Length: 484
Image 1 (cartoon, rainbow, N blue to C red):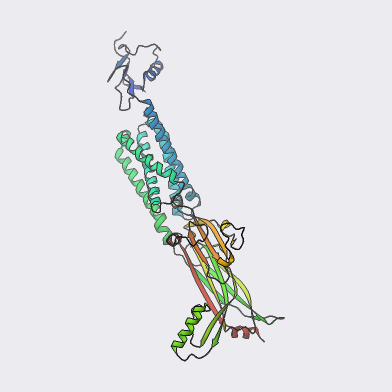
Image 2 (image 1 turned 180 degrees about the vertical axis):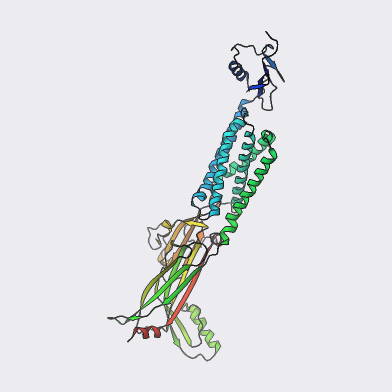
């Protein structure tokens, strides 16, 4: 029998794994004597081979009793690394999928797709971790695991940074905060092991990681900062009185008024509140001898709340009476770019009405559709403050008057904001003849305790604004067109 050893067991590496060779061929690796016997059995050695017999086995860097592997530690590291990568994959899919499938702009959709793809990379890294923390048969397994960990660290750091801006509780915090801690630990473990050594060209790999990170940052900045503010937002309102007609059987005049709204901007918008109000203006006319008396009359009228702030020299007391009021287009509807909406209303005034003029006022509150998605099915259904059955909205009419309240959840088109903030709601209050109100807040409906700073910040974040139009006509002209 030849005294040349058939099998060589190399010295253990940093993890305790010993490479097994025969001649110039690597035939396997072993963590323990049991692993070595399985390799020998595969090579045709009998089960009772003496591991200390130099005729069969040559030991380098230790003998048959040198097995420094710590299986519990290795398996715990593998389990924690794999679980973290899989959880990061799920988080990336949860953040990116709503934008990838439902965002209104191309840039936001691409950002969502990017998050989904990074989640897939982390899934591949989780599968590769089995090899890297195992026998390392795939040379690039360590680099792939490192890439997955770097993606997790970048994503979780971004989410944590955005959360720190307002530090509001969100269920996602229970995911990305522990995952951020995990990614720091995983990066330290991989760096200590020089996991990139198996990559054929580590410099190119590092350059690819840097380029990917830069492209991701530019895409996020474009979709969250530049693109939503680049497109202009503008509505055009018009109000016009038509030709009046006398009622055949009653001493009334029917006056038509046409209300028109058009989206002349570059982005679609949601209508969050709107109103039109027709008012008749009456006055006691007298020549005012001086400016001091005119200002005194204006202060008295304004103090009584009977004027909107008009100042006229020959009108001693101005009175404005609501004749008709209602919605124009309706909260929860929207206008695409270039879309317009017109509606004709008819109101009645007596032929002997004590009005000098009749005026119509339109006001429309709106919100950019490219920044948020409003739950219009919920928002369109009004709540009535005078109904005790409306829990959370009921308010005695002696205190709050009689109002309609519209409330609906709004989700930002950048899902990064949704997962790092509390839910946001658009709510609006409406009453005939009164100034309409619309706001965005974490409250489901108006509350005097609402933070005005939060309301202003959210209104700006979702691009909320309002526009107004007015038209006025003399009653004498209406009566003349209506005939005798």
